[in-house]
Length: 423
Image (cartoon, rainbow, N blue to C red; front, side, top):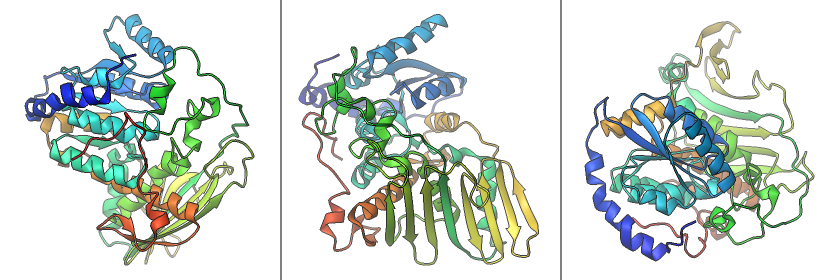
């Protein structure tokens, strides 16, 4: 692991990276190689490696992970294919590599914006997994940095690249069902308990201090590590930010809305009796001027609700639009079925590469600002649940009206040495 300090990092290679961004701003031809690094490679990152590797003209040239065991395993897979890849345990060393064009990020949530922000400042384009951010404030910061440094930043809400769902949204917004007055986002599934585990020493080969990064210093615990970190506020956003963000994003897309004027959310543990901090049950309502967006989460019901485990229902004057794993379907209020279709998803990673080549933000199906809005709704729901009341929200200032306690959750403290860049 490297020992480069934050001061050295900012004052040296990354500061130079601001100027370095200029050559990367030109459009690239179909035959120009795009060199991608993937950070956080144990779970979803492994899938991103394969997705980018399968795109013509793209070469995965670097992997970054604080777990040396995982890093060594993935590097060996490249060697077995007779492919070359560089391995990094410290993202700062990776970002010093000028030949890297883009960074794909699949770390725990609390690392999404820090790594994305420093990648943008270093002149890299970014594909960042959902949820975009760990707080509302850092999500807005990433939007500002992306615009300032003219970087292409894609959010990992893959269903935005579904042609089938784009057709469903187009149908709803055509007026064929009259006014769409409410959408329901449904996240219903069965996740097993995680039990209770005592603190312990980190596994050999793991840079635990780097894994914590901006989060508070705490002892290592296996229930706060690989994947299970989702269920702790210091690192994750619960299943609302983990999986529910997909359904919330589709609901927001179909309604054509951004940030709400108010949010109400309740939730708690009805199923788990273990180390979980985040809820297994949540119900949220987001209020807009003319429409409502509802969100339901149950992590103990592996059976369909209104035809779905995970999916969406849109309620219009003349009928409903149902969106699920198999596609979409219109049902008129007399019970007759209307238009429908499959999901026909294209590669979200390939959509990102298309925009990297064209340098056109409008080519992205899930631009950073869209990701910011959807992640923000997840944060707003969690905050309302944690303070226990309905909250009015100023969508222009992106803060709560007259509620200091709720506003304290919109940002957070960053551990010394892991602060965010400024705009």
